Length: 163
Length: 395
Image 1 (cartoon, one colour):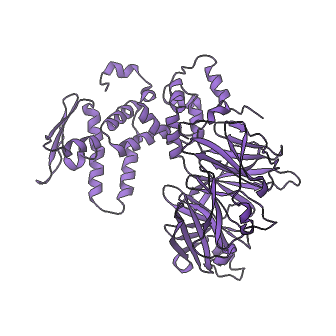
Image 2 (cartoon, one colour):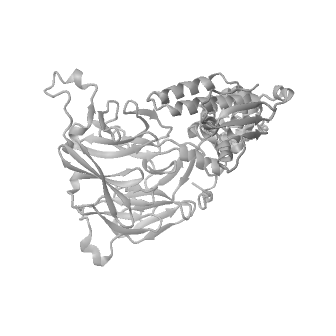
């Protein structure tokens, strides 16, 4: 599975190799949306092949899809661009299952994709916001690991000790 | 990363075990009250969200808001209604929210999510509370025996000593009273005027100290006094006083002191159509900068009710209020915008001015004219024993 992008002759192409050997050919401007790759590229005499042993192909592909969208949209200086990006981001995170969300977050964090981490953490935060304990546990499939009495203790700590 | 299919199928609660820093980033996006609920969901998340590092990160991201306080109308009972105002910058107004509170009394000052409250049911009692974490500390009575009806008090956090302090003044002769949270006794320091300076006092017999304005992360406190050329300021950490000279002579009735973007700002009313905004960028050197002017003919005025109501009244629907009648009261800044709230001295109506887009709006849903505003940012600061407030790691 290798994806190549339409390029002009002037842009440098990088080859990213995921943990499972899947490679992606991407423009430098796209890959450098990721802080970690940007750092590698800025080093003098850097090679065009970059190995990323901590990310597998499936999730690296998704991360790069996000980068491509944002790199492209940044080059146009349209006014409505922000709106387009926001709309696209919303679509991007809308139907992510928790397994994918987890691995994407790990990948984005590892690759220092600050904006993407921000988008994904906001998605997780929105799954918690305004929910009661039981709903939070249900959402995240959390089994209560409090010992008997411990939860009670926290409850007590969070209620007025005076009055 | 786990790309082992079997492993993936077995684990369901993936997101529970994200790395700490990623969890901090997720949880810091939630309001402090939601964190309280979240803490009951699992031991691990409870542990992560009670760490000092997280409490600080969460506070830094917490949305600045205002508390609005109105004395209740029940005669002979000193009750105060407290509501939370959040800025709605898209519609240039405030969202009014209920604020969790028992009838504890009057809020005098806030700092890092903590409220300094003067208990109106038990006279002479000041207390410090965090309404989110439900922690409360009662201060011993002040040495001056102040009944806390007309006095000045402020809660501050000293970032060098990492301690919270309550600074209080009843009357000049008692000096300033300082109480460090977690300690057991008040300390008295002399007030700003020495005997040989008595003739220099900015106030006469009738002058009463009131709650100061705090600026620069609550390092400095300021009192407007009966002078056209200076105010009284206090360095809350060093506990020193001085006169802060105004940028120029201004009639004391024609200017307001506000905290803007952390700094002390002075908004002077130049004419019926002009306000000047001055900012004290450097406290030590007393250097004021004139930031900008608000000019009636260069701002847009929104009054959505104007078209409907003014036909019957003899007013131009687009008429701006006379600036001489507007008193700047408080300023609020969030990520996207900065606003100034103004009160019409005659009608008691409230206005809001957005500084970037220069838009003035008349507010519809505000409480009555006699209310006061207090800056507030919620936090998860908590303690079990008062002594824990003596040496803080962060906030």
